Amino acid sequence: MPYLLVEYDHDPPISNEQLAANGAALGPCLQVRNIKRLRSWISMDRKKGCCEYFAPDAETLREAYRTAKVRFARVWPAMLFEGEAPPNTEPGAS
Image 1 (cartoon, rainbow, N blue to C red):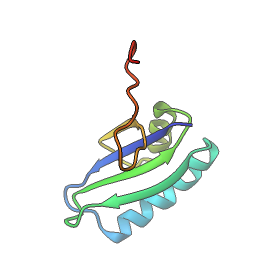
Image 2 (cartoon, helix red, strand yellow):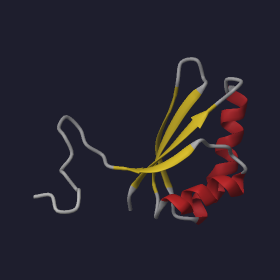
Image 3 (cartoon, one colour):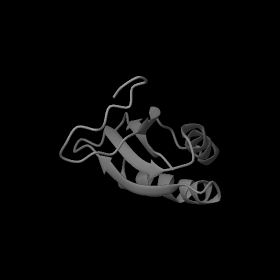
């Protein structure tokens, strides 16, 4: 399964209560679609956020968010790399 990132923009800044409500709404929607949340970040001003998932594909993750009625800005596939550049995966690359 690929890594997928979900980005959030919160205006006004998100509260702890709203974070908890979003998590409660998303849980069953993620579970039924075989999506695993890995970790989440929120900016210090609580206006931006990002969550990392293992999911079958981006559209399945979007569907889970829409079903849970949790707003998001973007969902995009990602490649995990730590400490060095990722391998070149462009077509025709050696």
